[in-house]
Image 1 (cartoon, rainbow, N blue to C red):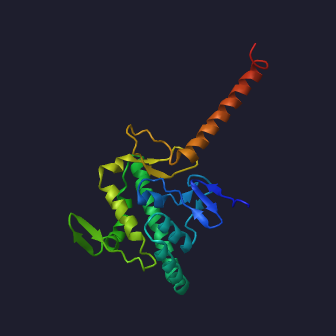
Image 2 (cartoon, rainbow, N blue to C red):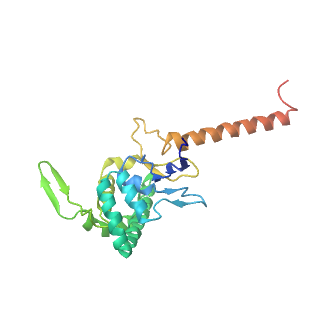
Length: 224
């Protein structure tokens, strides 16, 4: 039996059944910003290229059940214009959240980015239910943009908690993925040690070898 090829793209993987999203951000809102690969390079890849991608990410992230995902995909076929508008809104929200949390990770806060999130708040916090010791929001997941409410609430919860000081940007030169550093000594550097961390180690190893070879050539071929 031939094993299906899995291609790694950033932390995300592509297989015969579509994209398997890497969910290493530590919070729903950060995982959402990480649906863009190679952001600081000239080879940016948007992993939410279609509405089906958005629905698939939402199911993998736990926002939608498999049945809810399928219902939305059927609705997309009946209402393609509405689906395109939902995807555009999702993309705009993602970029707002990325700019906001990137700035926080870099030690600054832009008021304009907070303001750009304001229009999403009314929809995200609509019609809460009070239950013993908690507020519960009823999301209309039959709407094509219904998955955005939980993402916005995740962002607000992180923004208004001390944990916002633990938001980090991946240290890899070709990755701007965001994550919550939950390590005890706040020393986590990589969005995913198995992807960016390992790649960085390999690159450092090869740089050291090249440097060693150059020194050997300069010294006449090596140690004497």
